[in-house]
Image (tube, rainbow, N blue to C red; front, side, top):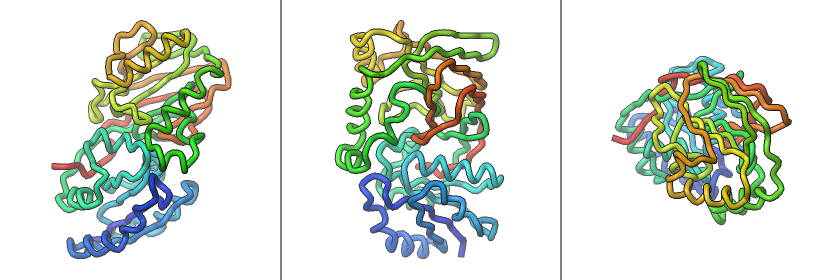
Length: 293
């Protein structure tokens, strides 16, 4: 039988995924896979899942949110593992899976793995770490890990929006320098997003022109402005009508250097990111992912 490593976060989303493990084991056995599960509620302990990964495994499947999936990819990149990834989105936002049209339905995800259609997709690198979906700084950056788990389970993406609005009045803008190619931008910002996919934090149309296999990252930087403009801009973002707004910069790049004068925190895929300065680049077609037919 073909071996399949299955990593799952029991506390992701509503936490009910773990109740379907017996179904998964039975289904994959019938499909000719020996499923080897690994339970990981602690992202820092994920490395233990790969102690035997060189032993004839065919693929790695991950059930969790963007943070769990991103942590798995970072470990695989550091270990130079080139196995295809199967995604079972069970987190709150699941932005990376959303961009690839991978559903939350467990039976449908199993079918995607069994059919075996693969797509090579890009990932981003920031300093010595990798991100699947987004690297960000500023307002909303720490919303994912500041929002209480119970609140996320009860309200889903709405919990992120509520927490973000709560932070706006007391947020301090930051001065930043962006350099890409021969271009330099210096300004005071509220939020910086470097996107591989089209969405982040449940905002599904942040980068409407993003492609996950084009070798480019989409950059959105929101300027410091008054609260009226901020709220108007976020309404545009919800409708996907913000590109071209005078209160933001938007461009694509395969490499980007960022300096920041303040102690602004960064985030990668919902987890704390590295300190400034940031050296960012795209790794084109780095990852093989099972996708729907």
